[in-house]
Image (cartoon, rainbow, N blue to C red; front, top):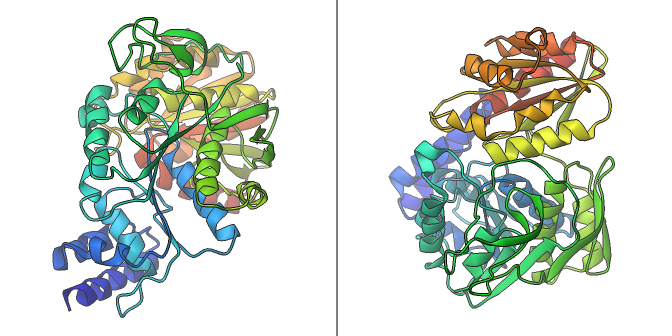
Length: 444
């Protein structure tokens, strides 16, 4: 009876949130947990085939939704927290949204994005058959602490899932090291040197086995690349799923295990996300042609290189949360050869992390590129962002600071660039998207 009451109450909350135009992704789950604390254990037991958990600092929402697209493309029914609400309450909401009023979940799969620090709590109630880990970077220092703390959280969670298959990014030594003590692991990666040669802060310089400094043959980005330890022999594992023939002129494409994959999105990092999704789907026994077909149908979620048209100008909108993801976003901006105006939005609410000193770890100096006509800083910490841009030696006349997001966007739209790129951190995501939708409609 408690389970049924929890489902009814949460479904009412979901309906109310939708009427108010909100996502309703965590509050219904919170309500359900108060009524029936073990509701996730009860509902997750109904999943017919696999439960996949997707963890990692960057790319987990995209990877989770790529997996969802592949599964739905071959006719499977899937429970998924696709808007990225990845703590316990958000996962519960996803199950309740799919449950009948009688308390049953009729689904083949569950795709569950999980916060790395919260996974150890969620896994008290649900045990995934497969776990995908995308990468590990320093993120929100005041919440996660140093990267070693995050790794310990993940190891604690893995201790609750000893029989799960791990799908790991082998190009990231921090992620790859998690497979050393796990009996069932596959790796994905990119063996060819993409020649990106980015100037950025790198995590994981030291071997997770012996502490010796790692030697790299080359970097892809961040600490991702081909590495080995001269002291103990720890090295990049040979990938079971190896991306090759990488093309990234506009939208990206690659081959993996003899299969060609076209992605309707940009960015080298999306190849890693797609390789993770491919590896998972292959291990589920899905035919390779169906996996490639599903990946080609993937559509990005909010703030994942979304495109809008305002006053006849293309506006590209992206989410970035930490130095690594901001560096990826800037690289994508500069891969566009057309001239552009750039908006960077920074908030410091709790989900963003209150400490914004990480801005000094981002290679904003790349924005000195001649294709960038102006930079506008916005959000709660717009002044901090403007100061950071000043210290990049960007000319003063090319920097604007405006805490009003709509005004900042219009400043860029009215600029001289051919395109506009907007990059914001987490709590600016949905409010900025709403502004962009309203402006697009206004200037149709």
